[in-house]
Length: 99
Image (tube, rainbow, N blue to C red):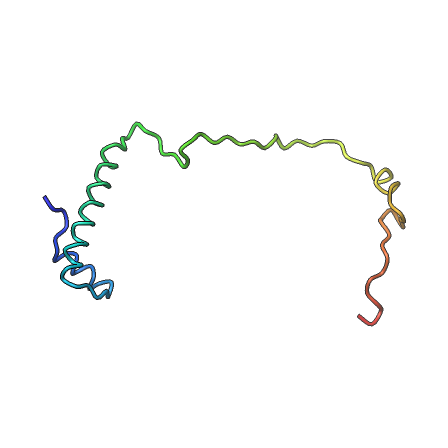
């Protein structure tokens, strides 16, 4: 039994402002009927005891735990700098006074 009629397809085409020929109405009615059958089969398979999934394969988080680790002290970080001033890296000026 057809789930969608030719008239319903014509109505939908009218709502979408699509110009559809009589032959296309018949074709689209058949195609939409097949699509509705396929969707109904998926609905039969999807049971309440099956949890929803976002991927076909299990996906696990590969990130490490976010934990505090000791870092360089200020003196150790500045020791490798080419220039330091007032406990900060000293960098050459790139803008002039006029900028």
